[in-house]
Image (cartoon, rainbow, N blue to C red):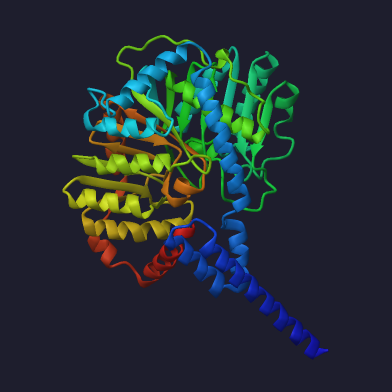
Length: 491
């Protein structure tokens, strides 16, 4: 009897070992990973045989889903080109973008920054010149304005959020949307399946009964946590658009004790950039609902008044459904072309090699490079990994800070007081490679200077991480940091 149990255990362990070896081979030979990521997974699979397999099943790639996203990318391109041809107004846009490309990206007043606009044009994200933009740095201001805009909606409200809590704010917004749906306004809400896995199944019932629609992006029963829709968009009547870092939940109002005051950055847009937000929503909604649910219609792309001295901007998407790492490439181009300063705020700092080296080269070239992360992190493992990268940046002359007044969730980059990016993408490998993200890239001195002042004000509520402090950190700090850094390519 004991012999049979012993042999069963041996066979089981042998089976697990064989599975791990096969999976390790799959990681090396079939998955398109960078070498650092491959080595990290090999270490986990070979040295933690059983649990390593479970970790891979949760965090590893899924080639079947990646094939599905490739099909989505083809569909997205069809939507994009159909939009370009959907009515006569688009002809002018096409000629305008063609002119920009033919002139090598030159836009007169943009100088060397025009290369960044050109980069995104080549990724299918055209430049819009007619935009009025308002920024929010507190949840209270953002959501009160959003609710008022929802109340004023006449035709449609399209929302896309990573997290929608079932708390007071979440319920309040659903109530407002339900009222508009009952009035005959088209309401569609797209939310992420994992980001909202704790929502009660009947949470949106009253919205549905009023005629509203909801859809879950890769629903909650999916085991893997990769490929999350991290995008945050709201489009109202094609006249107002929201993009940025705020999800929907009480913590984003700064009233949840765990996080304290919540510091984020979100944009309210009036202008032609809203068309790109609308196209993004239609692509994601139709993918989630098996295509065709929302057709291109002129009512989604209305004529708009012209804004004097409009802000130049592009709405740039990135993720498994795009050919290139558009947002990462934008960050890289911004940093490499900086001439004076780089101000970077991110809640998660686990950069890939290109961004990491770009920041170091910028600092070594004499630029004022500063990085701000939370001092009150919501994911400790990512925090330890971030600290390991910051330690090396310190050596190159980058100034690094921890925000101490609550939690900072903003994802923003400001360059030379001339160009900025605000959106959903963190400065980490997961945002660059595995999540669906969307950012606004803005080419405007006055607006960028506002964001820079926000950054400098945040530093007053932060503690600088000095080289002296880092050199004298505790041994246990170094151990946690080393482990997190070793497997950070898997994040």
